[in-house]
Length: 510
Image (cartoon, rainbow, N blue to C red; front, side):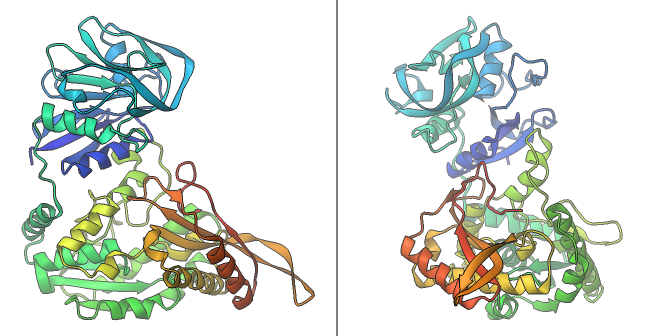
């Protein structure tokens, strides 16, 4: 593939959003750490430099060698990337005297330049920086300004190198997607050919070549990711795919039997394995969220190792890993972005498990997985399922895990999710769930004092899980749900609703 965009990650919280916005233009993007440039740059037709929490004026300023990129490929610097291009090429960057964070509006836009085609004066942009470019390098042309930021956009004369101090990738920059399209399509001459159908054809062909006639074991969860991965693999290798659905004892209420029934008629070879006692026994007494994830990951692999010996000739373990899993686990594919949490299905297999790993979805965001699933003809109800974490309710029970706590949370969660469906709110929410808090609170029930558990409800809207806003659910719904939970679930006497967005909070509590 020689129609890709290379995004160099300098550690910005928005780097992944750049990748998402590029994908929305039907152009494939890859994110690489600034200090690990690909040896072969011929695959990339354009390069974007991300923002960074660092300052180009600091001793720790990142300073990659761009000699094989600058002037040879269309190049766009965003925020830190723009300041980098100015600072190290004869311009000057200084600490800003005014606050340059949040919404701003373009007060000047140059005419007749393809980079800002269809961008008008007054267009809203999003600033997020403490430094500002005071003076541009000599061989540049000013393209746009805001009231407080004179050098908001500029280009280098005689080359296809552009720079902007604002973030086009965030939704607050109303014409940001148009700017990216101008750069990639009009300037870099990239084809907008990255589509679900193209992905399916390319991936199926690659899987056939990679796997051949060998057998693959895949862990199904009932969710979108593993289901789409399964159908992709089935399309490529047919009967050589052996699917296993593991009950880890941390699923939603009745989910084990319902998921197995769901896969009937899809043509997949699925086996159910109830390992709930094994998981809960190994989790007993453990409260640390990272340790809980690792225990679940370890036992999950052990179960699959046991099952793999029952499938004669199995050579591969397939996983439904998607791009956000990789990003949040390995710091933007090894770059400087901060690791948030580990994922049980990322990081390979132990030496004792003699299976190779195949991850057909690892370069896709969640919404892209759904579009691929639709291209494969998967049922809309399955594709519309909310994401559910691999470790299940273990990371929604804060503190140690016991069968009693799991049973309480399953009941609470069922009331919440069923209520969303009855009130026609389920499809308006990207992800929802309940969290069992490690606190007891005083209550009064039937004139008697109670001292029981508190649960938090969480519902967010998002497109890919990288950012999310809490959903403003109707008060009447929350009132009814709270009343049902307290009346119907013994051990719970208080319900709260989480109104935190991501960032700064994450979607899950652990």
